[in-house]
Length: 192
Image 1 (cartoon, helix red, strand yellow):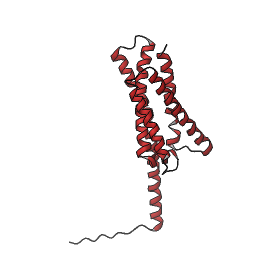
Image 2 (cartoon, rainbow, N blue to C red):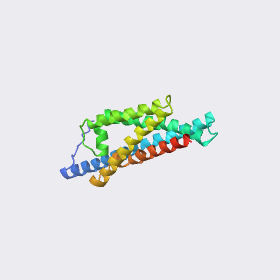
Image 3 (cartoon, rainbow, N blue to C red):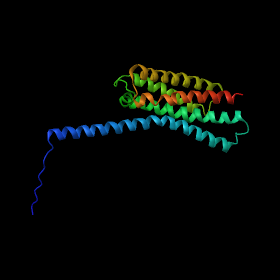
Image 4 (cartoon, helix red, strand yellow):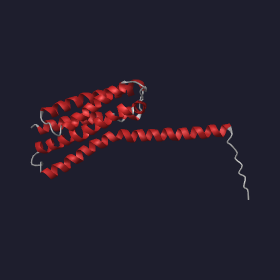
């Protein structure tokens, strides 16, 4: 038995409404995905704390506050700065246009590559902090602070002057400020 299916294409008005609904849903989903991705840097921060706390208990470095701060600083540098820099560098180097759009910046510029190499350098300094200590840590903290606080200033100016509240611009301010403060506080406590 032959069954014939009759297909009635949507009218132009229905077609346009459907396209708008799909586009609206897609844009909303993309923004949610971008927010989640930008929160990743906060997750690295928390992971750095968790690894540091576990290491403190395992190694017994809780004998005094300076020893505890030293251990926590080690893992904030190696885990938080390391992951933030290396994965941030990866994004700026290999996902340039996607990252630029999430920040609200123009796509197709080599500025993203420059920023990627800078981020990668920061991440490598963080990882190297596992083996190199003392003044190397201070140099890593200073570089990370200048880079992240500078980035926070740029993002804040973008929000105030250009009303740029894209997730890649607004949400990254939190770790950009939180990480340097944490590093310096732990550094000063560890050096007492």
